[in-house]
Length: 449
Image 1 (cartoon, rainbow, N blue to C red):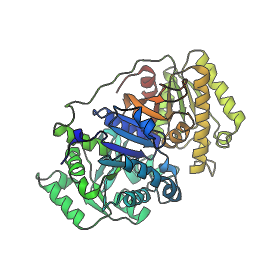
Image 2 (image 1 turned 180 degrees about the horizontal axis):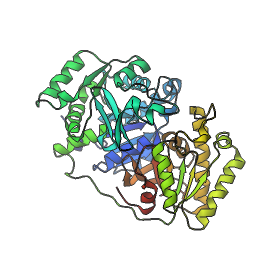
Image 3 (image 1 turned 135 degrees about the vertical axis):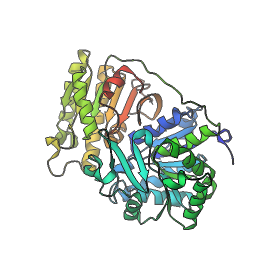
Image 4 (image 1 turned 90 degrees about the vertical axis):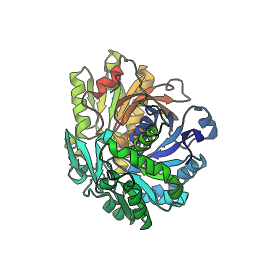
């Protein structure tokens, strides 16, 4: 079986949202495989600008899209990634599996990938211990507030405004979403005798499932999973699905056989005088980060979501002017739409639909772009998975590379743009549940976790 040195590029991936896409870039880069993340499928000319990168990603928004959108847009992206000839092509999903038959349908995306790559079955790894995400006997768990919850009892995911999770068994979720059958490589097989993972894998595949799901409990689970993903890819084909736990698994295996350095790479970023944060997240974790930032010297500016979701030009300019005031005094600022899922701003019926979120995200992106252009600030953060995708597309950036880790799954990135004012901008795209309460101060100070 060929090794990493036989490939110029090892992984190509599509992320179903921006925060998840930067999460994979971090997992690869810190493990010695520099990655570049594009905002749309790259041309050969764009790729040629990053000759040292061993992985190529495309940041998408399919997490907030319908199956009809996926069928129209995912196929050409997968076909472009297939042209790159990497041994692994990854459809990256959120580590909390938040999706439904109508929005962010993971089963639908897997089916499209199977057709493009001609896969007999698709390996699926959702657990990511570094992010506090675990799969045990097919049921998924996620950390939150110092506790670990089953997905359907998680205080955030069970109440997600668009894709509330009412089922923890991922096999049931796949059956609901696309009628897919899933075999399971469970934790007992992964922890068994050396030959047990292979024996279980053969048993599962012989039954002809559409998906092969892997339990993930801890770092010890990762090496056997990574080995099976890498060594069995000739049978399954290059297409795989899952969270960044998939990259952590194959990296753990590659390190165990000497294909990667014994220790992860280290990065550091220096401090900046001012930071701009824009947040469309309604997660409790982000709410606490916003409150803590006020105690740490940030100014706060609550935004009215209704006119912004209509794209009201006057409301956008009003927010820009309000944000420029503290920035002009040398202070950092957080512009936010809500403080948690119970915020009164979100109780009106019809709010937080996919269409509402997309329009709000675009307006937040427009506000951020104008603040950058008019303030000269060189480091920013965007909070919320859906928000990051829609806001990021407004910025006029074509690619990201990693500058330094900040919080698991939310690295500090370096932007690449044809606009000199945005080129080399530093930005964090943060999922709603990522990071500790001091994260905004850490980003301003450039302190790696």
